[in-house]
Image (cartoon, rainbow, N blue to C red):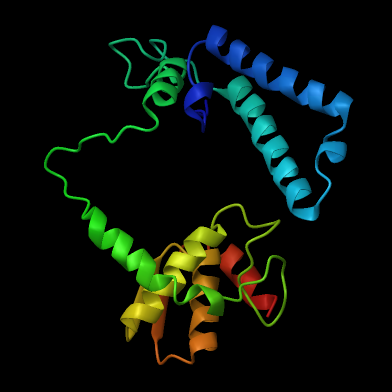
Length: 206
């Protein structure tokens, strides 16, 4: 049996049925009204399709969810009740939650982001597969978003490392190689992955 990939798709059959029904209702409603009519621009249309894919994934995982000994939220279950989690976040979304023993160095993070902002105008990653670029952030890339690429680009540009080792390759690896090319860096890369097919496909597109 396969475990579900989403927290609100895990549980007993009643939970799975509830989740599937909720997302299926959303799908049918938007299908009738026409999701393309709601998404007029290319970016909005892409976002609408992504939302549709996520909803369908919820339905698929709800149906295929592995049954649990105890429902989510039960004190014997390690899985939180997704309904309670959503309610809690809605009422506490603007509050800062203390993390005892963990210093996030918030001011340092903000200062670093402000420093990185000087790099942002130079970032040229395309939305679609566009040789000679290997990385792209649009349709077909559901694993490494533009925000991730911006941070990785900025880290490399700021620190100028001489060696880079990445365990698990793919779009992030493509992002690194494109960054090296754009900035003309002398950076030795090692990519480790037992299944490098995705990365190899991105290399072939160049």
